[in-house]
Length: 275
Image (cartoon, rainbow, N blue to C red):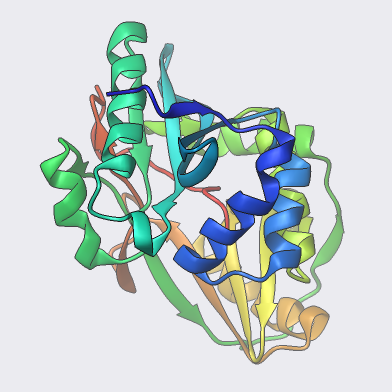
């Protein structure tokens, strides 16, 4: 089953860019940025025909953490095949390749479906829907004094662990956090330390026309409302759209954040899974 599967190499980047563009439509600049930042640090498996990649699947190291308990996990990302090689079982073979690794190493798999309508495909492979995020719209109201300053990946990750470790959550390495910060900057965003009421918080966000997309923050919704005016002024936007943990908030749009396979925890907070 795995005869055509191998690890991607630098010589495969052109082929990987082609698969990525056909499957996801991202610009070539971003795809090359992704591989420049990650190739060699993550696992990229390809199914090759005549040694040319026709299907691909990437995975990042992570941990499913709950208190003192932590289980190894792999975040599956950007998987797909060239149209002319679909329905040959190549992508499914790549999944079974990762599945075998997960079973042999007792680790969980998780991913974020790009569309809800592809969830049934993954359910047939044994995945289950797990956690959601709440997408909340915040408009600027009262003007308050809020301080913003740069934050390092290490400080962000330390503050992130402090903020979310009271609930089952996905824990990332500093390297992954650094990539997410760089990716946010690639799209014109910033990752900042926020000073409000004498306390420090973090926020990762990127402007999209009139909207500021808040990818992750440990600001409560109340504090986010208070900081909204300063954030809108800083990024020249009119309002915020913030992804917040569903275990803390019930308002806003329900957004599936993860599907899981062989996971010991449920309703796990999953974020920082790439823009």
